[in-house]
Structures are given as C-alpha cells and as structure tokens.
Length: 83
Image (tube, one colour):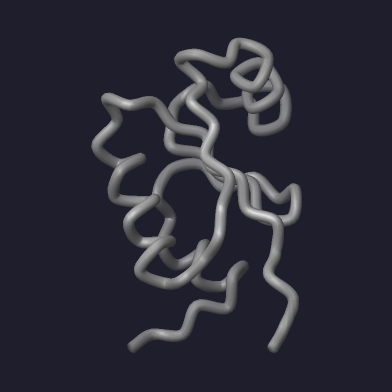
C-alpha cells in the first residue's frame, strides 16, 4: 500500500463546493484534515499567502495548493482511479 499523501482542506461551513470536495475525498477513502477558515484566521492567512486566492474550497496535497474542486487535478495528485 502506498503512503497516503498529506491532504489539508480549507473550507467554510456554508460553502457548497467544500461539502462536495469533502464528500468526494471520503468516497475515495482519502484521509484529510479539514480547517474551517471562517474560524481560524491564521490558517486563512496561510492559505492566501500560499495560493494567492482567498476563495474556498482549497486544498494542499503534500503542500501543493489546489484551488477549487478541480477533480482532474485532485485525481492526478492523489492517484484516484476512476471507478
């Protein structure tokens, strides 16, 4: 079994795309840390500094920022095989 990459999701409770992203990761059996940037100002600043974007969802896969629910990019970075 290959090593699970580090996955951090930046989201807010009211974001529909955030919910879609997290449910997609769960379906794909990808473990991730979820950070609510509406409550964690420092994390929001880190996220914006790294990606240059303030919108959510965003995720870092092994420190590589992915802005939005870019399924193709996420599948490639996480080696998610189409079922």
